[in-house]
Amino acid sequence: MSKKPLPLPDNEIERVFSLAEFDIDYSNMGEQFKDLATLAAKIAGTKMSLVNLIDTFTQWTIAEHGLNINQMPREDSVCQYTIAEKHQFEIPDLSADERFKDKPYVSGPLQLKYYFGLPLTTADGHHIGALCVIDDEYRSLGPDKIELLKIVAAEVANRLNTLKTIDTLKHNLSELTESQKKIAHEIRGPLAGIIGLSGLIADQGSENTMDDILEAAAQINSSSKDVMSIADQIIAEIQIAPLKKDEFNLHIFKDKLERLYTPQAINKGIELEVNVSERTKFVAFMKNKVLQITGNLINCALSCTTEMGLITVDLEIKAQATYNLLKIKVTDSGSGMSNTAVDKVLTGEEIETTDPCSDKSALSLVKRMVEDLNGEFRLRSIDGSGTIAEVFLNQTYV
Image (cartoon, rainbow, N blue to C red; front, top):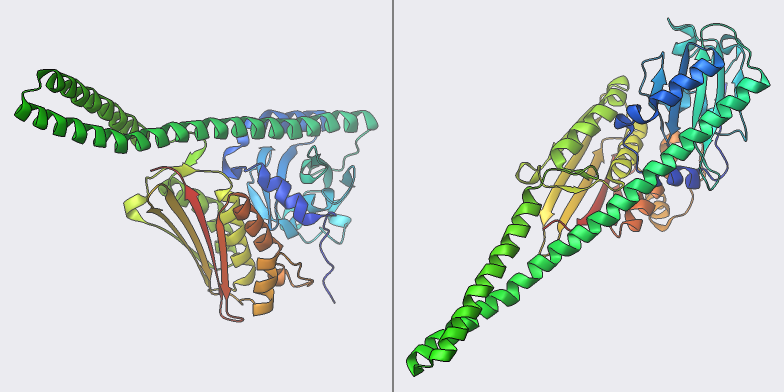
């Protein structure tokens, strides 16, 4: 019996890209939305409620009430159907529905029965996730409760948008700090020249007994040294400053990737290995989309790697003349890609296929995000022998 295709919203690529624009850390959002998840359950009179965001492969639970869960494969979720609907999605009895009756949360200890979900809709009309209420008993929601739940779902979307706006403002402020840092670097060169020149004038003046030139040269020399000392102090303070909310270092980034994606790898019997360069593991870099970029690459590797396979993530920062280069490399031992598929990803063409391993929309999304950050995306693969994806992003932190 052929497997039914999973539901996909219209313009799925644009939907996933819209979610990526929020640049959300899925493991660190609970406090922002816990109150809304609890409110939804109270309104509906259900034991459980979830706030879920859904990317290409995974449903991420960013807030919950009554059910301890943080992620599940998108293909196993009920909310994947909700985001494909215009308004709402309801299942009176999950155990009587062919699509869900054999899922572990229905046939297993939880014995879930009732589901009602509302899509979380962005300002541009994309359904990036769902607010859902769930119970292990049969329920029925009247129009008044549904309208109240719609208000809660709208508030979730509004709060996500507010957080995105705040992050944008912080990013702009960070860019201003970077400009100040650049100025500090740039003034050091000319000041060094002034110090050298003033020293030379002082030497020549001494030979020619030019007291007035000696005095002026000494003052220039002293002032220049003072300014250079200030510039050095500014640079040192920036370099040793603690991480800001919009920053990662490789040490923290590695830990976050392992916590987010190791459970998925273990469930599939795949080894996930994350390596960082020891010399630069505490160098700060901007969070901006790196979690979404790397996560999509790992998810692609997971979808195409069989049991007992290996996925390696190598993270490195290399110092260049005026910036740091962040390198992200994801290598898998999976089924690989044909040259045609690689070319289509790199040129932005769609790949028509029903094979989830051949669905390279996530790679196309990565390419688009990297290009938006003025970075470089490379892709190499041997059909049947694995894939190597590399991302290069400039980070102005030196």
